[in-house]
Amino acid sequence: MNQSKTTDAVLVSSYLKGEESSLSILITRHKQRIYSFIYSKVFDRDVAEDVFQDTFIKVINSLKRGKYNEEGKFLPWVMRIAHNLVIDHFRKNNRMPKFENNSDFNIFSVLSDNSLNAEKGMIKEQVESDVRRLIEELPEDQKEVLMMRIYKDMSFKEISEQTGVSINTALGRMRYALINLRKVIDKHNIVLTN
Amino acid sequence: MPKMYSKPSRPERVNENLVPKDETIKFLLDYSKALSVIDYQNLKFEALLN
View: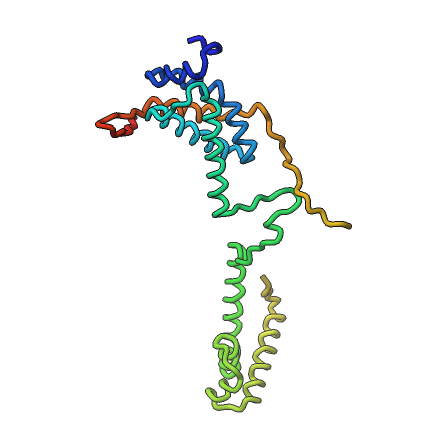
């Protein structure tokens, strides 16, 4: 078939008669205009590729089902299908908006991820286990008060009630517990920072 | 300094020579070859043959 002279209408009718190569000629003839049109709306190569593919799937389905009746207006018909699919694409995206970063503003500059990364998570675990080991070295009465205050989050009133000592004694034991912990940390040059 | 409310222009202009990938075209031609619509008593059935 002489590709350059054959009109779209002739190609469409020969395609409808089963001549698959006619579709290839039609796509080759119009792909650049249709694809550029789609890309000019969506500005994304991958999305444009998808919309282009969906457009021609609709074209093929309609032609094979005998729904095409716009003789001689093949390109405007395909462009209209492409246009409708572009609108569908934006409708879908409006339901689930996407944020596009550009050179002026990057969303990740204001959104921070507060969760620890693997390394910081491991350091945190190590620090916590070091602190637990240090606490184990404290005298029993100081250790008891410190555990109740820090790990069980009890008030000094509750601690005094549970241990049977006055609030001032509990406060004193807590104070000595912290002093002793600091002493051990300084003495052994233990680094407890994340 | 006045605030700028205008949107920055698209960094890339639409290149008139944009074309879809060859794989996409091949997929469409293969799809067309595989698709057959069967007419049966005013009903249309689509069959995709591999």
